[in-house]
Image (cartoon, rainbow, N blue to C red):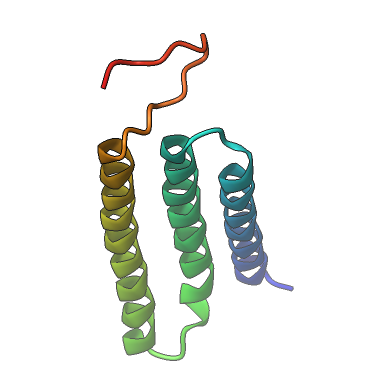
Length: 106
């Protein structure tokens, strides 16, 4: 195994780890706002690391550009859908979780 293959393997494993952390955050966090944060941040970083790990093995420049484009579209879709879910939760009266157990004003 050469150095490039080892770096690719590490990037892909770390990216999959970020996906796992985002999924655990979805299950463990207390409210919709913290769950959205876990999914959007961890999953976007995980996808980015996986794409970076796959780029050196791309068959052509066009395939590499397609992978980067897919990552960019996923970033945009994640940000947009996270915003829309948070906005809908706020309109329904969902109050953000706080450490003191206080509720914030709407």
